[in-house]
Amino acid sequence: MCLWLASPIFATLPLLKCSSEDISLPRMPGVTMLSVAAERLENYSLIAEVAKPERHYDVTLNFCNVTTNYGHEGWKDNVQVTVWLPLEGWNGRLSGIGGSGLSSLWTYNRFTPAVTRGYAAVGTDAGHVRNPLDATIWVLDTAGNVNFFFLQNFLPSPKGPRSSYWDGCSTGGRQGLTLAQQYPTAYDGILAGAPAINRATFVPAMYYPKFVMDHMSHPLSQCTFDAIRNACHR
Image 1 (cartoon, rainbow, N blue to C red):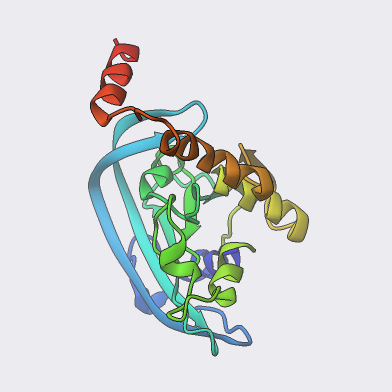
Image 2: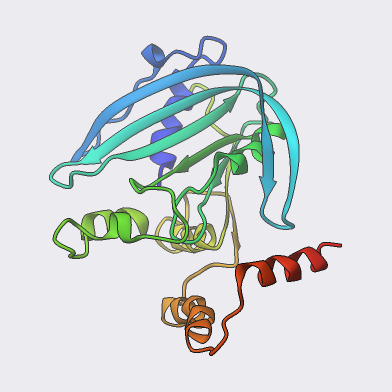
């Protein structure tokens, strides 16, 4: 899962130059490389998101943003893999970043805690639109049938990284357990928080609040929810 694409980037990309012309991507049977781009970003400001414990803080980073796109022959898919490489102070470690809900990669803000600490970070959207609450826009084809190709994407250097780690929660946690089961040697450590693996109970549990609301004679209004939430935050 995207680690096979990140490793040759470390091996061929001079960080100070950060040019896509210096990236030699691997050749894989049945896989077509569609594009590769490298952009040097300095004094890049954004909000860092930490899953466990959940918190946010402002950071400013200097890194090389490498984005690659590839597809599988006959699948009509477009999978994007993103790698953020620190321009200086790399600790020799790689951190894989997981998704959330029904999205394999929810936000790039999850990259920032790793890069701030000197890690390189890598993640993939698995060829899907990033929406953690709605999979219908990609899991069904135009005829309304399950797109098993896209579903399969979702479910399953001179100086390379000294250690590699996976960090994910919810869907990212499920991805971590899948890696541990199917690719046990891909990462040196896996942090799988709140893995959403029992779909038979997880999906009904997500739907149940709506089910209750639909059967209430006087469902709660949005302003009532806002009042409750504001009271809790005082």
